[in-house]
Image 1 (cartoon, rainbow, N blue to C red):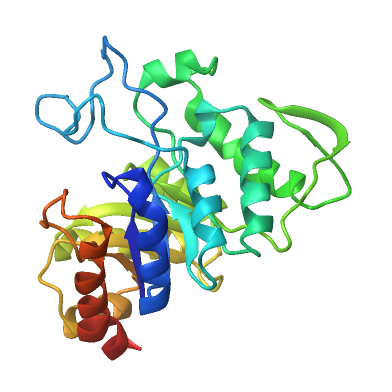
Image 2: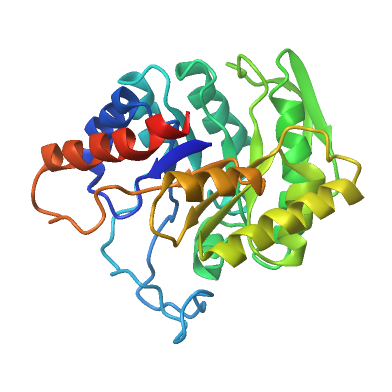
Length: 288
């Protein structure tokens, strides 16, 4: 079982020293969340709330994931980096390819891309990208990125993206794993058919096992059941070694954890150290 943490709702200036603490304590990775903006007039309904409104304030900071990953990679040696979730189709294909490739190079191959289609139409419109076909474009973006990351002369010709022969350097030192998010049947099928894994949210036990089981079924349907596949999610269960071992047996490869949850947000970055180290001693070391 792997143990990942995240940067959501964290002071951006605290993320880099916290990443160093996680690296030192033996955590496996850290996930960066993604939003471009919060519009004054928000008409897009947030899918995970009763009233359709996001559960955060408009001035919540969402630092660019790849800038932040580069900074965290510079002060760590083993921690891996990914997303929860990067709204890749809201950006041009070449921009995504360049950002991720550069992050892979400066981290010595410690990044993966976890992409999803998002929910905020306003972000797409401000970025000049079509909101209505974002799922189809992500389906094509995944193999296109793999082609563009090969190094040397590369190109892509598809329905939504057309890239003439060119060089995109630096290219990743090794293949960048691509994971997907989303809970719909379409999203789960995308992950099972095209991706190296799936990143979910926070679920009770039965929901967590249900997603892992469905992804296993779909991978078998696509003839990919023997290929490596990551399933990353947060468990809404009291932490215990037994719970994490049962989750691993169910096919969940990584759990998200925030050991500092509930602490005073103004207590300073050093206040993260004790809960990070205690969680590592109580659970991570015992699950290895």
